[in-house]
Image (cartoon, rainbow, N blue to C red):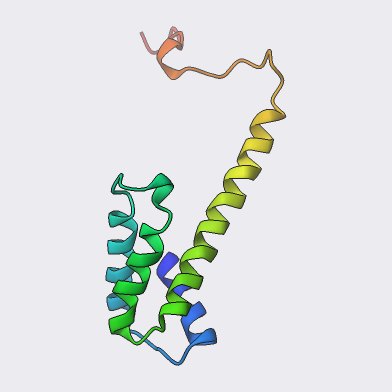
Length: 108
């Protein structure tokens, strides 16, 4: 699905039209390599990987960095929304623990 978002962005904003499978490979490689723990949260590394991996597909470096930052912003906003929902939980709310579940008499 993420590759479809990349493809749509590139079709709208650039003249590059990379093949779906090639773009999928580049996006997956960038996602995997950005998890290397050599920077804080992959900042900088993720953008460089996008620029390096998408440039041979005809994508300008500026567009590659732009899509990288937009995807990161989307992740950040959705994480902040999750934090807001988590903070709205009542303090005495019991979080279910599947390991401490009492078995039903019919399961025994």
